[in-house]
Image 1 (cartoon, rainbow, N blue to C red):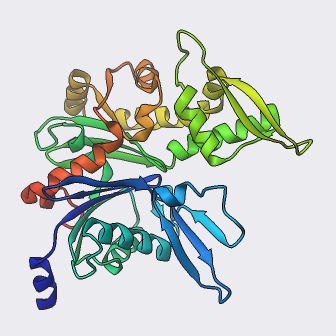
Image 2: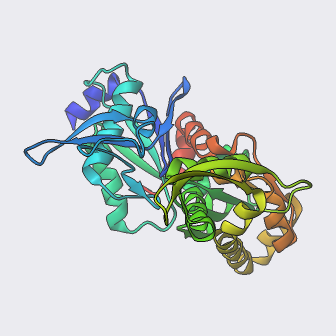
Length: 345
């Protein structure tokens, strides 16, 4: 305990948005200092051990392009740690990078987790961050951080509704007086959009494409609603019948069709939350609208798509990809608020 306090004197508090797709680190008083993909490149040694050779953007650049002895992997899946050891290595790398490679600094870390994690999954996150070098770990549920990052007055006695669409999960939360009144978490996010696009290209065009191409298609011509003018894009892949490389032209209509199912799942989850929201809070939501955050909010027309279904105003917050990180960053500066909204009690 004394050692922890001693280290704490020299530490700099951090907040980490540990996402399935990206990890964003904020240092108290310095803002966002790291924003990199949650990808780790691992080399398999002849003794069966795994050696980390790259983390973040450098590792993502290797996806689909590594030799047999190197794997570029995502250690988190659907917002949950899938590979404890590699997640720990990734967090340790980002902590050391935050403090200029000084391994003696042991910061207090605020970390966001999806709503509805089991006690075992929460403990896995805590243990992973502590093992990576933190002296204290404070867990915050993503809907709260997203709402705060979107600028919603979550401490007021009013209903605020946020939809945070990340890489692995979609978090929907009604928040009032700093607490989650109604929430739902589903394992649908940006990665699901990508995989749906990949599967569609395989079924319709017999074309095999990789993760990076699927993501690029989503970003460039993905739409949730029919645009004024359909967009096109040329993509390259391997013909699964002939085995030869080929190039085809696809349209935004193809992409819209491919992601229709995950979009439907998000809309169903939103309706389920609205149906159980207390009437007084529902009135606030009708008046103030619904905030859309997370990388998935960048899908063109998603706000219009959801608004047409629930008949409520929906707005995309500024820099939606950074909303959760901004929210946890604010909590670093407001300790009283942090203790009010944290899962640690």
